Length: 406
Image (cartoon, rainbow, N blue to C red; front, side, top):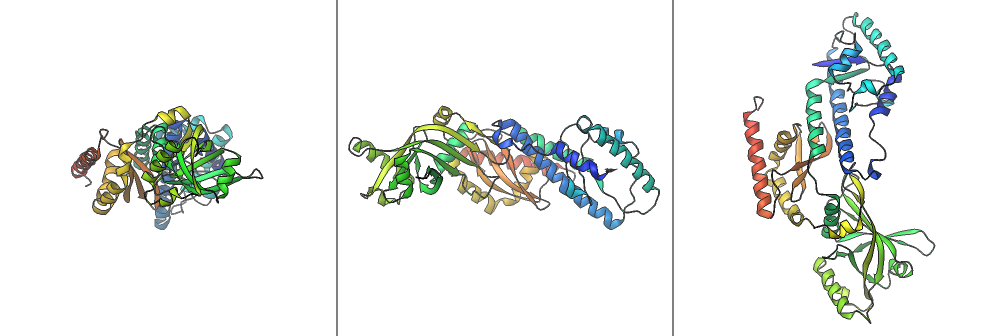
């Protein structure tokens, strides 16, 4: 079922301003709200692309638009006020409303809609006319995307403290930002190892490195660590800010030996840590932690919560499990997405796993986005992860075989 509504060009920017995702999502610190905005933005983007495809098909067929726009209020009620603006005016403002549009569009916009509806009615009398700038709403498509949005907004993810602590623990390198002599921030890529007891980083610095002198002069710094396979803004990263000090060789020789061994456990080829011109440093005071887990999932974490959080032990198996699934069972992953979220995708691959779910990269109509798929039950070990994936596979395959469209 296709619902069509001709828009005056001046309505587009208003719709766009109503539904555009909040610009301060990443600084809100509200995980659930951010997740909903992310799912809403994705629904908006996917439906926009689908509407463009529908419009192109109709133009090729020189489709005759039915007089569906005679009553704007009835259309608005039937589709809950959601739509995508396409056509020649799309560049000026494109949007899908995620709420009830009748309560958000201004009275002047409503007047424009009524005026546009009158124009549509008059032009419908000319048989065989081209589809004008149009809001197109495939009701089945919208329902599918709404189901996907609902699923993603409630999909279980690691708590912020645990996710950030885990990212720092599995990392080996990060960007250390120090304060240069002239007061400007300076970034260096350095190796580190997270301490087992609290997750704070251990460093081994050369006396020749500029950041070593800067740390000695001003102990304030930050370390930014990215998730494995980091490619851009949609991927996770965490920044920890605090004070880093050199461990005194005269007073803490035994402790230096312990810290060096802990560093070498994460960097087994770092034979140079025992050289005389390398010294051990450690962050002893954590001031702030900031996590960005991807688009619209961000927040600040209490330092005590970070240091007391448990590292997700299943993440260490992420790379081999994902490689196996993508190499040998990649055709199953789009079926998982369809079964658990209701969204049909063209292709998908597994990006990472943790003890409560998997993160998937999906492609639909040429658009790539991430999907969170929780396990039916949390996994306690590597065999448990396998058991959960097998359970998901059986459920998805059974549902696909039972579907009339399969």
